[in-house]
Image (tube, rainbow, N blue to C red; front, side, top):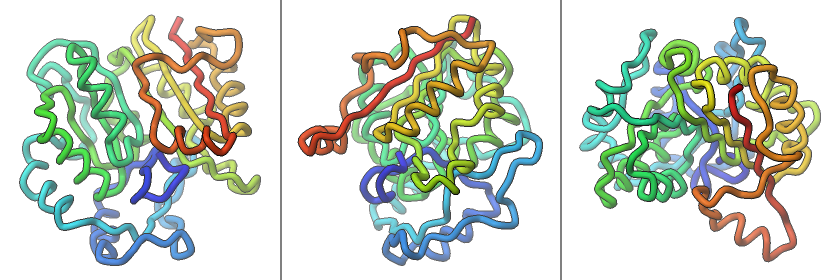
Length: 267
């Protein structure tokens, strides 16, 4: 979730392997949005007309998060590779598979995985702090239905997710890029949504949520324009029971803010 800093919430994100060293080199510094830098050399996906939606923040990673990566990553993470995954092999079972793009610090993913034990959850996240936090949650909650890829989500979807293989996709509170000149960096764009729709099984769903009204309107418009998808509601959808209300939503509601969900299914 990128509405807030990575220490607070995390966000829709993913990182290229060669970019991990850049993040590692700055991992001892405190997060500071004023110090955020946009990727340049690998800033776009020309095949999809998509500009990367994340920034390389000077994100702090705790000793506990780093220790979790050192201990648990070999068991629960999947290295990025230009090769399609076999979900039955990855999870050790045949089960519905949900792609979670940008799980942040993992609180929501943990809660959903706990209540939907019959489903597999493949989480994609860019920031090491988020990966370390999610690994700690996997261990603490004894989860066996979560796997993690630390890489750019567009690359992962294109190169690692087989067509018509997913039962669902969750994209919760992606970076809203509120300034108009930055809207091109928003993750939810037509080419990427079309790519996601191709990875869904017939009847599979894509569920997005945001607390930025302008982004919610864009999500609704973009998903409505995808011919492979149909809206499950008349406009915005009620928040499904399986998505827990985050502590940031709760705080926002107390301040009079709102959040919006959109849920579409593949025809």
